[in-house]
Length: 621
Image (cartoon, rainbow, N blue to C red; front, side):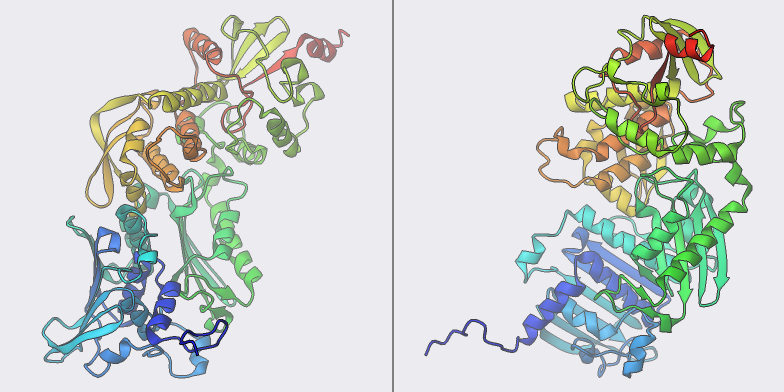
């Protein structure tokens, strides 16, 4: 008889294989190990926690705490499956208030690493140490050390090469670990936390009593200053949050920190509820910054949806969604600044105090509904998309003006051509409301949106430079320090050649900031901090592949978003009174780029009021 197991035969798996399968569920990457170990420290009533990471966590992850510790009798059980100090009956599963089950993750982590755990119970004369390799115990002994627990995880996935090869670069892995540490720090501001990455200076977050102080440590000062507090209670749910004003946004959702009953989560319901609160206030493609704490009855919550407890399930999700949405909307509507929301794409100083602002609240609502910042990157062939978006708004538009680039301006299917042979040769009549350029053409009155036109010119210039040789740089007279999250810094560090090609010169400045020495020449004079934040956000969205072709189109459209944002921030604004020479320069600039009917965000660049339309309106026909 063959000694091989017959195909399809049911058999028990070895303990080692079971542990490695469990590790696949719990240990996704080094950040998963950091999360599990720090959560264990918090459950052990630690007041001080230190985290050390080398090579993004692949070489070493070490977590030390001053918690309760484990006795020599308890420590070996912590490395066995189905051992925990946090459950005693089935009923406890429905009311979990701890972060996790201390004995569950440890054997899974130990099975895929070289592992050392030392623990000393408070008041004990000595501690106890266990070392293992790939789940096999190597030694157990009494050992000296401070009260509390220290766990070292070395050579993660070394025994599982197939898993190790899927780890990203050290900076990327560190960014994920730092993100989880930030979330855990936000939910427990009363804990002193230190982090050490490689040989860099340690980052220290001292314990504090006010959550706003911890938020200021995690986020940049500018982001923290832009947050307003929300505190709302309803039967079965309390929402305590700190959310940004509509003027402070991010290009992605990385600025959203969500917590349920003190547990960091990645919950789609909470995320959607928070973003939905800004539906009429932010353009699509922009996200608020928010730290949201939801507290519900544990009986109405299931935290065992995900092996690593990153997701939760509510018995009444619609009620939770509604409560969060109303809490944030009510808090924002009571603030006086709501009346000063600028139109999407405008800078904070662009609309304030301008004579054309009219009723700010009405203007903001209408601008949001028009969808001017939909990031469509309109180019040749996008005319149909623009028309569809315009018609979607529901705002009555004259049939003559509904499509300013109708068929008489098109050559071939979907290929728009300029409405005039040369914008630069038009006779300029002047500015209207310091916002529109008026020019006379053979066919009628050309009305050019000065911001949209200038934005399109800058966008095309940045894009062209990128493809040809890289964006030209302009050095700053005085370097600027920009505070960023660890994840954002990691994104910048992982693509130094791309950052340089985009026209930036940056260098690390501690663990929470970068020093900016140069920015793209096309956008000189703009807010340096905002440009770098947008750059980091764009790079974080880019799925990197072969770096040998930095000009390949695979970098788009994430970089298109960056180009559009940089152009938008740098372009002349509504309300800017332009000298005649600058008006002429904008019109002439439209002749130097491939014609597109909109700015990168979808706002029309120009419309033509034809002679026929004017004659009809004045009843001369």
